[in-house]
Image 1: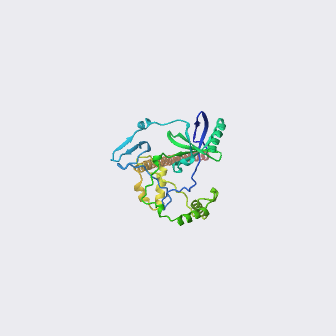
Image 2: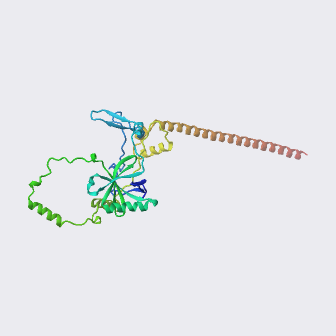
Image 3: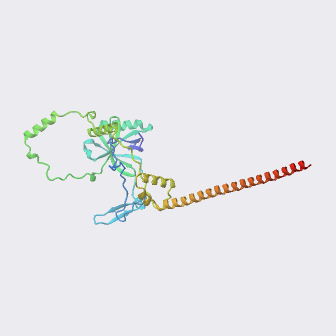
Length: 334
């Protein structure tokens, strides 16, 4: 476990350096909200109820609405002036009998582990609480908020349990909870006999979360039976004026065409994508025309060169033939 808080327990002149760890965890099966038709995750946006605009987290402030409809908005400067506590000391106020603390006041539970230098005073405090059968009422500052808590012993560990403030417990105001005068002695005796027959010790191992076990078995059966789908990829919203990659635009066009929605996809394509596509098409056409012209010019030049060579060869051949004929005629005359 990783310590979430470090400090010291102080009672009298005794100081116990400790580390604090979260003592509880939830094992409930976590579900996501999804779209039934395609399995897509449901996302929630922070939208202003007045202007309808989506609000960035940095632009969200703290507001308080009074009973008469007046709104007070607190700034970061206002909150910075509030009294906060950065103390790393768990100060013991007094030791109280355990039965005087209503369990309804308990909020969260944490384990306290002694630091290496505080093992002996830690054991001293633990045994003092155990022998006196009392709880230590303390103040502790967690995340700059001071709260009331108790220290009690569980096995060999000192447990710190934060508490609600008394005014946070709602009063049980009900009209009719029954009158003991309406109960007959025989009914009370029978109820007492039933309680006695069902009396026993609490063994945590005898109990379990049947609902959670059933959910896990259901999920395992579906996974084993292949009753699953792949997690769908999320579509990113297309914003106006964004730089659109040509390959991405072409890919979307191909996918839309395969799905029979080429026209719809084309009409919904951002203007930037169309402009980019047209520009790229023109550029490609120019390059293609340039290549064609170059090839044509090369062919023409090659053809002319070949023709010149052929003409020169023919002229040379004719000249050579005439010279040879004249020489032969001269020999015969001689």
